[in-house]
Image 1 (cartoon, rainbow, N blue to C red):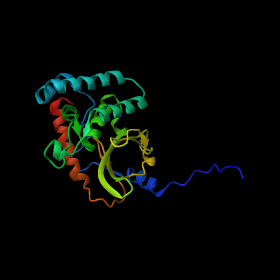
Image 2: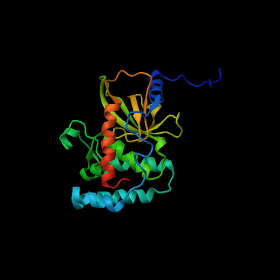
Image 3: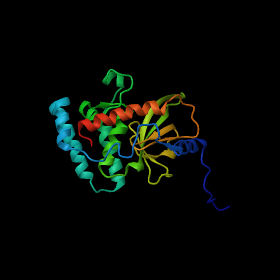
Image 4: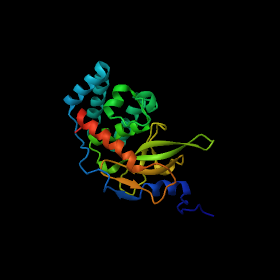
Length: 235
């Protein structure tokens, strides 16, 4: 018999991934507006903030970030995604918030993440999100995705966050992750169970989740991070 050309069935894991990210967009009562976080930076203010908080070492890292922005300006989206993902994965050491900030759950600004050279999954995702927006990637194509990540073969899961790039609102997102260095379509990340996703304009939740995560409570940390970004020079 000739080989079948039928589309292979989508696994339940892939359906869950895509469905959980395509739910209802919510903005009312979240304190989020379309213009909450612009894609502009004030380099002089950022340099002053970095000098004050992290000194000469921080300034060197910030200049490397500026150089990245200059080098990637106008480049194709594939190159921008790959190089931004690599930049933060290679320069930032993963560490728990309690060890970095003395707090259980602190969402750092990109300046804080670069200055410390340390961060957890939320910090990687926020830094990549802001960098890509500064490069001109439309904010509506980017979402930070809160997931449960399965580790190894023992069935152990942990809360995790990744950044998704959506070519269209219903597209299979490309996943930028600090745990897996390659950028992979979400439907291939069978180790991730999405819970909700968000950006600076809204929150998307699946039709049902079994997670105890509270999206609205977590977005209060996002609003706090945005406020600090604006003070530091992210306009």
